[in-house]
Length: 167
Image 1: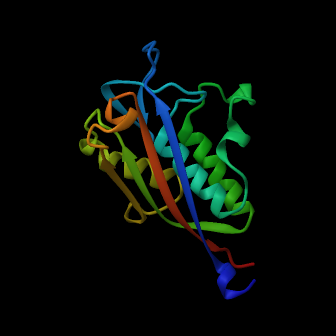
Image 2: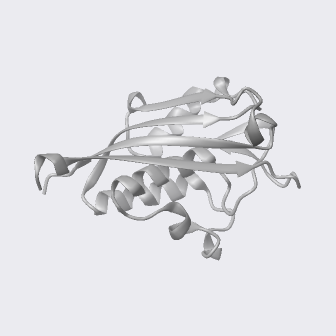
């Protein structure tokens, strides 16, 4: 493998609307956010974990989260996204890569999430076998613009760096 092939960058994005039926609580980056309405989705709708998983899959050229665990896979209905992320990390390792670091941005008008930052960093770091110092979780809003600004859902973006494992 050439020096340029030793590092790979991946980027992932996920968006989910709020669950209008109120059937579940809000879970982001593996952390339950008390008192907040949940998101609708096939699994537990954890936008943070989904964006991270897509970033990792993209960096390793292993496809995308939807084709691996989406609605065409009934066995993953209601699945814990931290567990799905763990599976992706194992697949990335099997492909010959280790996660170096992650940068996650949660885009939400509501609820306020800053009090949960450290727990989210810890949950994602644990799922990815990283020191918490290698995981950044940030929050922003759309200043009331668009569907997210109207409080209709939450989005997340993630960027990762992978390094080739020694063979």
